Image 1 (cartoon, rainbow, N blue to C red):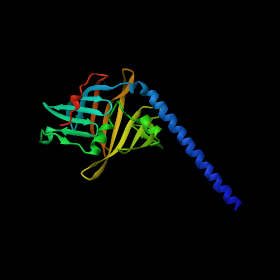
Image 2: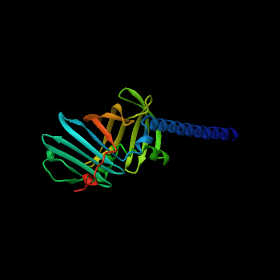
Image 3: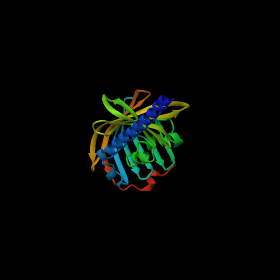
Image 4: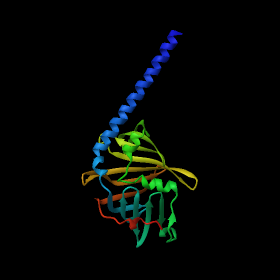
Length: 237
């Protein structure tokens, strides 16, 4: 009986030590990430404008993105004179895609809005989720041939994963699940070509993979923080 109690006690304290080590590692990873990307300065910015391009299924589209804190986002992609528009304002959003045969705005559902908000550069919520204990370190995984910490986030909009490079401490991949026509699809956003804009480290190339297959590439040419953007830009139609 005494031997059994000793064994249970040893296991109990071992689990406490493991849990403590995991928490300490996660704390170190998050703090080093926030410092690496200059998150403190980023939090002071209230808006941004991005200009670049998107390559999708062989089509090259011009692209502009607008964001205004706390929760306004708009993207405009241009192809052969046609504009594909996506707007998020709080918990509402819509999309206009004439390439799909209609120029009318189509409302976005809750999951679609959540997946767009994940791309926010002003509100990554990384520090918030960590403080609220919604993160869990799940080990390591290779991203583009480089080792990265795999961190699970239980966010209000659903579970997702971020992958923090072990050397740079930049987030090099985000993984989420979206529901399309009743089917759950895994989407990986893979970040690369990091550069500094106004002292903020940003990935200028984002490759999207759906169910492991390439789906498109976005390239940012210019990023300007604290630009004046009128609220009417984000008006919901």
